[in-house]
Image (cartoon, rainbow, N blue to C red; front, side, top):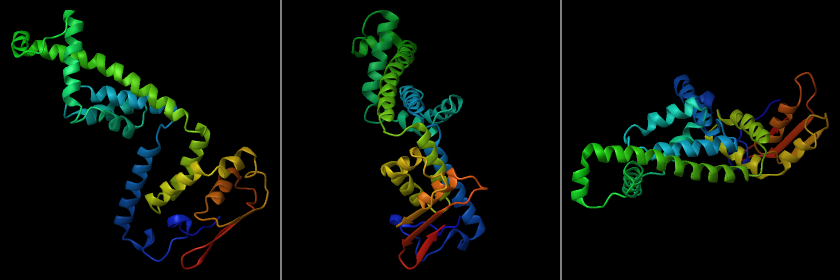
Length: 257
């Protein structure tokens, strides 16, 4: 199968530097950064994993260990095989705007658990409790409140992700296709992902078994050649691939066959 470089808005790539035109060092660095982006973008994205990642991230964000949330989030995401980007992003549920009320709630919850009463919000009572007492209340409250908020946000994220409309198997197919466009640009990779998830034609062709049936396919207006890549995924290397895609590009006609 041969194909031109995909370009913006479903068209072939017009004039401009291609990866082969760039110095080897720059091209390889860009390729590694793009692949790192796609790894963080696509790893462990099942609805259950997404919900668990959000829950873990919110729990980390509720921790009073400010300044080391990032390594904690990465460590937990790696241990539990979660999406590291989602875990770290969810940790920002506790941010500069929510930090004061969250800290206050954590101290109050911790004091209630340890002493059976709410902590009076007066400076004298805080001084009587002492620094170690406040720290104990804060740590206890952060664990309890973090677990509660993590469960709430995690379950909500799981429900939203599960209602996304596509089976996890199809999302894995989408990831396998999108990664082929990363070396061109992240923009093309993301545009291809959006089209594969939005257009019902692609999952329909897979469900009907058309792509691996040996049927001849003519794709007029093939854009980035997504259908051709799908045909390649569902056709064995020893079998003929009856696919021809044609599109009018900005300055030439591109053919995928």
